[in-house]
Image (cartoon, rainbow, N blue to C red; front, side, top):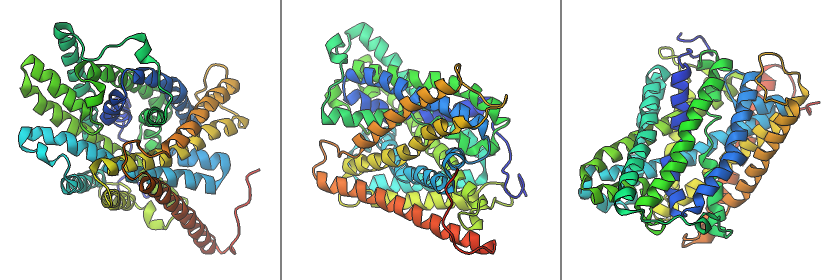
Amino acid sequence: MAGGAHNPPKVMGVADLALFYIVTGVSLRWIATAAAMGPSSIVVWLGALLGFYFPLVMAVVELSSRYPQEGGLYVWTRQAFGPFAGFMAGWSYFTSNLPYFPSVFYFDAGNALYIGGDRLLHLHNSPLFFVGFSLIALAFITWLNIVGLKFGKWLHNMGAIGMWLPVLMVIGLAAVVGWRFGPVTSFPAASLVPTFDVQHMIFWAAIAFALSGAETASFMSGEIKDPRRTIPRALPIAGLVIVGCYILGTVAVLVLMPAGQVSSLQGLVQAGAAGAERLGVGWIVVPLALLITIGNLGAASGFLSACARIPFAVGIDRMLPPVFARVHPRWGTPYVALLLQGGLGAVFCILGQAGTGVKGAYDVLVSMGIIAAFLPFMGVFLSVIRLQREPAGPEVTRLPGGKVTSIAVASIGLATTLVALVLAAFPAPDEPDKLLAVIKIAGMTAVLLGTGALIYGLGKRSARRAEGFPDAVDAPIS
């Protein structure tokens, strides 16, 4: 059996991992979302960088060196707070990607329309097109990941190129247009000051969420060559690309388009098309749209690959049926967990569209994904604080200053996460039926978490019976 009974093969080196972090860390849709908020989004990017991204990276580096086994934040939270907290953190992160898939595919579908030129743009408000695109794309990446990271990593690597190269192209167009004609948007100092109203504050949560992704590869630590050394080397390389793409990409879009005309679904390719038209190089739009499409497919594949390792790790711990711990006899992949992730993602592609338009569905899915993802990020930062009581051997990567610095940095990340959680619960200001949006966000999130608690209880009872023990409640961790 490839990789052993519970051990998929180690196939990812520093270059593969850096590209994986880029494809899961850069999401081109957030560049469009940020540009739509105007020049003040640049300052918000910097605030999210200091308040969330850097603390998350530092937390991941320390925790992954303490506990480098497959499972990532599920393992870290379990170690810090016990099996129930670990399970719920893993479950919440796993379910956060169910609304993520259709939301990223909606964005991808909107940009893919530009590959066909003007012939396909009439489909930009067609729910049938967006749902169909999502289901086909999800089926493809699920199959590719079952075949294995040995092959799937090439889509991740191409996806990473499809993330930064389109941004570089738009930056280049913006530089030439700005030099020849001047920027469409002006950048006075007053325009950089963030606006403290509901619409802009909701956007802050999305920007913090955009800078997540540093945690993804740790779910697959068992498939990384020497993870204690490889993760700290790959993260800084990827971080430079991620931060540059977001900040410079946002500036470039604003140079090419007024903020009020930027679409959250198609903003980057719109800006590229606007710049290309002014420079008489309209042909560039098709390769730009194609790269964006590949980039988002690679990102979705990366998150599916990472998140499927959660039920796989939980299955090994016997908190889920043993079938989830199986690896494919030929490809050595957790194929049952991958099929579960793909199947549930398909359900959300359909449910997210119910009772609303394309943009309304996109906004609801984004809000759900942010809430479900930030709950386990709370667990990550709290785990850093809690685990400072454990000795750190020479294999553990620590910040200068040791325990005091780790607690301070984790506290900053925790505060940012709590604020983002509250803001993400608000519906988009342009949502026509705000009450329905809130009900869908809160209701579906509650169902996801309640289902996780129920599954945990059933799994715990089943595991105890299999071991010959009577049912009992988890004892608290001392």
